[in-house]
Amino acid sequence: MNETLEQAKSNLPVQGFLKYKDLIIPQGEELKQAILDLKKEKNAVILAHYYQPGEIQDIADFLGDSLQLARQAKETNADMIAFCGVHFMAEAAKILNPTKKVVLPDTLAGCSLADGCSGEGLRKMREKHPNALIATYINCNAETKAESDIIVTSSNAETIINALPTDRPIIFAPDKNLGRYLSKKTGRDMILWDGSCIVHEAFSMERIAKQLADHPNAKLIAHPESETPVLDLAHFIGSTSALLDYVQKDDCQEFIIATEEGILHEMKKRAPHKTLIPALVFDESCNCSECFYMKRNTMEKLYLCMKYELPEILIDEELRLKALKPIEAMLDLSKSIK
Ligand code: 13P
Ligand code: SF4
Image (cartoon, rainbow, N blue to C red; front, side, top):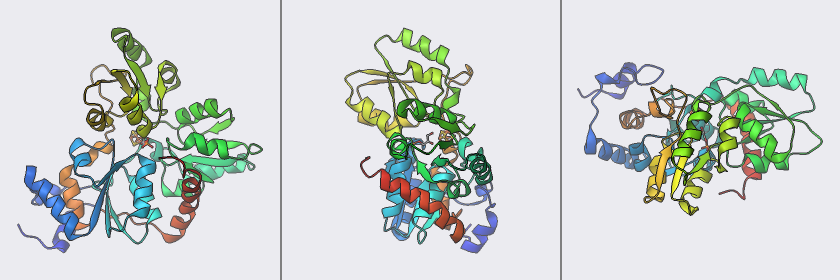
């Protein structure tokens, strides 16, 4: 089948590529080459988060955490950004670089934190606490960002919270676990939105304690989206990039890792001789800590989104400008962070 772009578009559902079985997609090495050819042909850049499937991480031009990816998206000269991450990350790329075409392999790559918070919800909180500043985790949609005073990511949150005026209360949304952790670290009282990450809240403190007992030389490292009992056990707590750096630089040879399992792909490259053990979750039948939203993206969908330039992230200009303000405030305050 040699279809035209118009035929292909009519073949594609609005959400995701559920009907893509009707399209011809190269496989294996040919698929990799086809993606590289499309990159050249369309002057595209592939940005990928550390939680993406390994083969997508390997083909990406730039691999990073959410802060690093936002910076890359702002700086790129490419005409098209193929964003391999979840929807709010691709949307942030479009907010920061509106003249570029931003495509996401699967628009159903969502996030439990982003889905559980809304601009309207934040407006109501502001009405209740009119003097408060709203600091919102980047894991949220554009409407939520637009109602925020400043955005944070896991790697700059502490620096930013410490920089906020002490005479103003802070509303922190949407991750209550990260908020609780930040409140403890900075000593700032926070009014917390009741949201959480379905991946990080699945870690079981009891099962991890048993893992530590079975591996007495291992260190537990955890992302601050994990719940307090897990964080209380951890030898080190940090953002995706901080966890990567820690495993690479610390003398310890064995680590139990309480964050999304995709990070192990890059960790193994950076610390090939160290033992890396995924932390256990409550569900004994699964034992996996993968974010199924992140894993909706596949090489096949990456190929299709680059070929047909769909699904494209589009955003209303008035909303974009409102959402841009707190992101720029964040970038200004986090210049010192890698
Ligand atoms: P980072 O900001 O550490 O990249 O985390 C993003 C995320 O979705 C964590 O679950
Ligand atoms: Fe969202 Fe959690 Fe997935 Fe990160 S791991 S994208 S916070 S659901």
